[in-house]
Image 1 (spheres, rainbow, N blue to C red):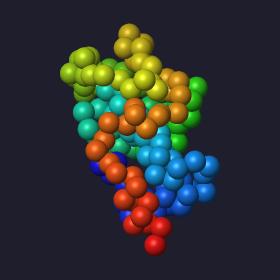
Image 2 (cartoon, one colour):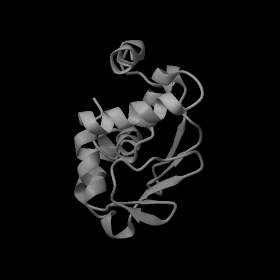
Image 3 (cartoon, one colour):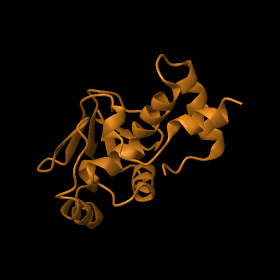
Image 4 (tube, rainbow, N blue to C red):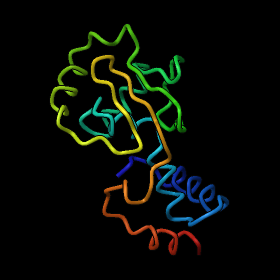
Length: 143
């Protein structure tokens, strides 16, 4: 779902295992806080693959700094915006118009007029609407 390969996913699992709390939820939080996923959730892209490509091409800034790493982990308080030089790209306008009525998760804020999004909190499990049973993932990887 998130477009992560096995080796990278294993790394996310191992990091989630070391974090306090439930391993499965920690894993989902890490995946949700990837920059490419946040771009998708904010409505800049129609799919996560498209969001990944947009990030790779350097169209976004995080707290004013250009970031072109899709796996970049965003944290509460970070501001994500389209770079000034990329704002005129037609694809962004089309996606934002198509996603105008798209429900943005509670842990994100979006200002459509300025094309700026902000991470306001760490996502809660109920904010993640994917049909994932993280318990089964933890069982598989704990072996």
